[in-house]
Structures are given as C-alpha cells and as structure tokens.
Length: 334
Image 1 (cartoon, rainbow, N blue to C red):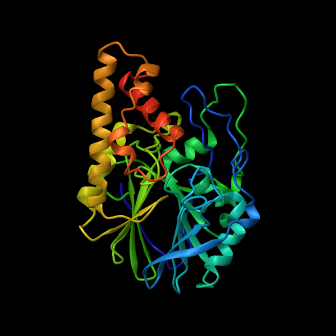
Image 2 (tube, rainbow, N blue to C red):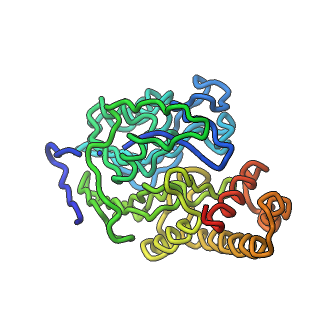
Image 3 (cartoon, rainbow, N blue to C red):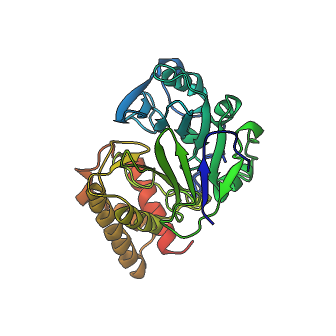
C-alpha cells in the first residue's frame, strides 16, 4: 500500500540505521561509524554544497582524498530539499561529520529539519541519523533496513555488533511492494518526492528517492562509477539485483533525469548501460569458469575485469577482488 504524506503539520511514526558488515570470508567485525576507517583526520574533512539541482534541492558531500574507502569524496552524498515548510534529507553522512553537515545546511536554510530518509544501511549514509532525529527529523526507511539495523549481520569472528542508538532507528517503514512503484509520496516545499523501494541490490533494504519537479533521482550505491560494484551480501545485497535495479531506473528516469549517486559523479540513465553490460559479462564469464571446475583463486587469477579497468575510476585490487568474489558466491549460490 502506498502512503502519501502532505507535510504541513506533525507526522505519525514507525522505522532505520547503520551496521555495515561485508561477509565474504574476510570481513572485519562490525564497527561503529568511523571506527577502523582510514581517514586522515576527521577534523580535516569539510562538507560543501557540490551541486544545485533546483532552487530548493542541493547536494552536499565531504572532502576528497581523505577517505580511502571513497577517495572521490569522504562519506556518502546527502540530498537536501528545503523551503518554508521545512527540510527533507536523503541520508545523513558519517556520525563524526553530523555537526558539519548541519552547519553546511544552515548556510542556505534555517528551516526545521522535518524528514530524513535513508537510501541504505551503511554508516557513511546513516551515521548521522541519531543526531538529526534529535534535531526533529522523522526517519523513514525500508522495513528491511530497520531490521538490518536492529539485528546486524553476525560477523565471522563471533563478536557482537554495537547496539544502535535508539534515536536513530527509523520510525516510519514501508515494504518492498511492487518494484518501481512508490511506497511513500511526500509533498513538501512545492516538490513531490517518491520513495521507491529497490529489490536487493547494494543491500537488501535499498530505496531510490525521486524528486519529480527537479527531475532527479537519488539512486544510492547500487551503481558506482568509482571502483567496481559492491553488493553487501551479508545484508541482502545481490549482484544480479543490481541488474534489476538498473532496469528499474531505465523505466523510471527520463533521458535528462539527473541520477544522484551515493559516490562518484552524477550521471544520466544512459551512463548505466555500460555498467549493466559489464556486470552481465562478468557473471557469464564467471559461470563459464565455474562450470569448468575452476576455483575462486583460479577465477581471481583470470583477471576478468581487465577489459574494464582502463575506464573504471578508482579501480583497486581490493575493489576488483571483492567484486569477483561476490559474483563467484552468487553464481555458486553460496
């Protein structure tokens, strides 16, 4: 059932946040946002408005070259819709950066923060949720995302994941429903915003957020043009699901729709096609090698990504190895 919300007063409540665990056999234990991540220093990271997609829709992001996980820009993008009726945010950045995120927002709007929706569970997108909830934001998310936050994937070393801050747990949740069909529609500041659930792709609780009048869609991390694809299989992600997600965006977006990626550069839907071709190709080549009895080590040594390395920005041996390992696991149905 689709929920329509006209934001002009209070909102009722229900459901979302961070526990990033990648379990491919060498995953680290779950960490609180920022722990164990290779930043230079948190105080060196600056948050800036990096794009203005409409008079009331801004994109802000962290400094480049300080986050080894995302050298293009520290943490994930935040989309901010603002106006006299209040502010709606898509994602909230890392926990350690929440004050800087708010300070940047206050350079262009003094309106109250009303709504926060998360594109997926990872802490570089949800780490600031408790802080913004305490500023008055009502947090929306997929049911699966809330469950991922409350029951983090168990690490292979058996240690316990840190308990989430209750303030950051989403209070409004919605199911997957019919792929491509909005689960929630928000009417705010003259904009119509649709929360559109995505079948398991980057994680099992992905949502894309469409801004109808601005002709922009926040697509999150199932597409990345900085490094190879990352499907968080421990949290319901799927390489094949990324193909489904791309096909869904192809039907949802127009040729000139701005696609707001969680990392990398902003794109159009035509830019997703080579990415789809690459995923389909690597899946097929991996299956062929598995059918020939090849091991994971054999497949990693085959360097299947070689045709794509020259055009993949941010390519690293770790990124390639992670991608191929995920494909192997999926093809083997493990």
